[in-house]
Each structure stands twice: as C-alpha cells, then as structure tokens.
Image 1 (cartoon, rainbow, N blue to C red):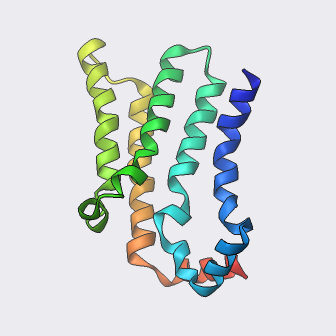
Image 2 (spheres, rainbow, N blue to C red):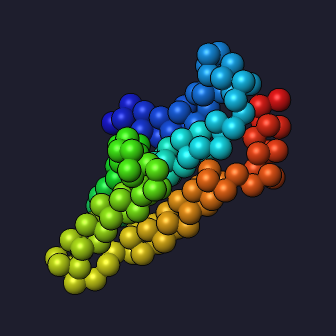
Length: 154
C-alpha cells in the first residue's frame, strides 16, 4: 500500500522536473526556449494529476471523495490523448474534451444521487480556470511569460 501511495504521489513531481534534468532535452531547451510555452512543458496535467491523487490518498477513508478524485485525476491525463488528433490540437479542444469526460461523472451523480458532489463543484471550475490560463500562456505567449521561461533556463 505504501509503495502505491509513494509512486502515485511522487510520479507527478518526478515528471514536472524530469525535462530539466535530461541532457538531451536541456539542449533542446537552450536551442528553443519557447518550448516552455506549451501546455506540456507547463505540466498542467501532471500538477493536476498529482494534486488529485495526493488528495485522494489523504482522503482514502472517505470513499465518496476518494473515488471522484481518482476519476478526475485519471481523466485529467486525457488531454495528451485528445491532443494527438490534429483537428483537436489545432483548435485547442483537448481541455474541453477532457472536461466533457469529467462531466460524464457529474451526469452519473445527477442520475444516481440527484445532486452534484462537492468534489465536482470545486474541482471542475478550478480545472477550467487553470486550463484557460495554460492555453493563454501557450497560445498568447505574453512577453512576461517568455521572459520568465528564459530566466528559468539560465
């Protein structure tokens, strides 16, 4: 049990810092610093995954919270799968599609329990806001963000 908890919680932290420690990718960062200006380098998906898994583990004795948090964490990784479709990637639809999958969980709660669970009421709006920020930083490329990314590489 402890091994699963350790792997699930630390996987996100390892992934967030992996790119900076890999020599080949470090060379790519120096050649093309704007790579940091992508949703994958921003690592939104892994930060959300790690947060949801960490909360699910801490609330594992509360099955209603635990189950929904693990569902959201798993669905949160779907942005990479949806992003593989060229049309979806070009039109920035990978986040709305993963939110639609999470809405299936909300629909299940509405059908079975006749209300939306508080995990969905808190997590889904927060995820949508953070996804919007990620898309803005990626597609908008504000100067302050690019400057921050270049300083991060130095």
